Image 1 (cartoon, rainbow, N blue to C red):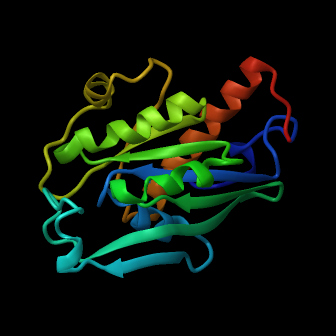
Image 2: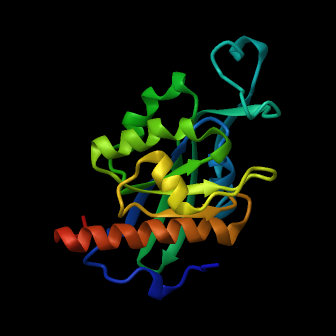
Image 3: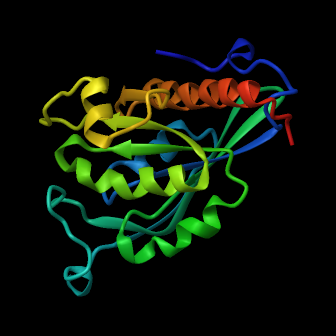
Amino acid sequence: MDSVNDSDVPGDDVLPVGIKILIAGGFGVGKTTLVGTVSEIEALSTEELLTEISAPVDRLDGVENKATTTVAMDFGRITLDPRHVLYLFGTPGQERFWFLWEEMSHGALGAVVLADTRRLENSFAAVDFFEQRGIGFVVGVNQFDGAHRYQPEEVRAALDLKPDVPVVLCDARVHNSGIHVLLTLVRYLIESRRSHGTPAQ
């Protein structure tokens, strides 16, 4: 697995010093777990207990054992090198909180769309959101215990992704695995910005 070092993020002329990244995806795909796993500070979490009142609006198909949910956002930080810091913002997954995504996306340089192959249809909203706004993203396939293992190209085809969008297999509970996803995103953003001649802001 990857680890963060100076050679991973070349060129102050390509990326800004502070890089805002969204961690998005459907309900229960592991966004809070990923932010907490990779953050070098104690991650801010706005998780609340699920209640019977929310049952009619929060579908628990495939995540029946989930007891909490993010109601605003998660926040974490990771230093890539002496020049670059990632600020991670985890979005809420339930449809009733999607209105927060628009505000959270302001200033975001890129995003990770976490996917659960048991409920892959829940990834379409996040993919569409970032495609429509021109925000570069990668898909991290969170490999849950007991779930069928699919190859990245199978996931790409199922989500109808563009050929250049990276698809990465990961385990949101494992630090190095989460770092690998983030570094894949950063490298993708570097390549995209260089190909478009976009300077750092």
